[in-house]
Length: 163
Image (cartoon, rainbow, N blue to C red):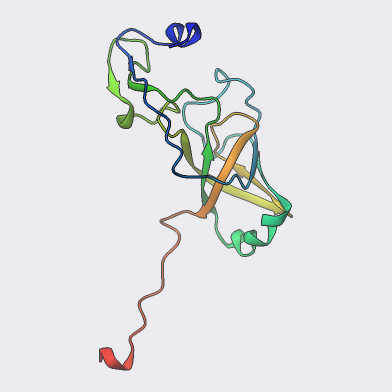
């Protein structure tokens, strides 16, 4: 544990010295632009009427946005690159109530993947303007998907053999 780490732990929190496995890879498809430049500025949860934010995809991924504007809401996955990754229990409100990391939406987790439901405002080429994010400016973008409730798969096709 480094000097900095010991000062960042609240009363009752616990951390582990877990080996960092590198058995998976994530390819960032772009960067997120928000007005939040420090953790203190970030809202606890994004609001669908919050400020405009930008999902700036790398140019090679622009064709992947075809058809995206038919959805009002999107699920955005991003890498919380400034989060620590070693807390097993947390004291999120510094009130002595200890909670397990997996029972929180805290950015502090072994794999700091953020997920936000956002409202799509418009598309500008390889950029999506959205509302509802709660991450720092410059956060790496992992993926964008239509909101899971808005995307209804088609009914399975019945083959002649199934009749």
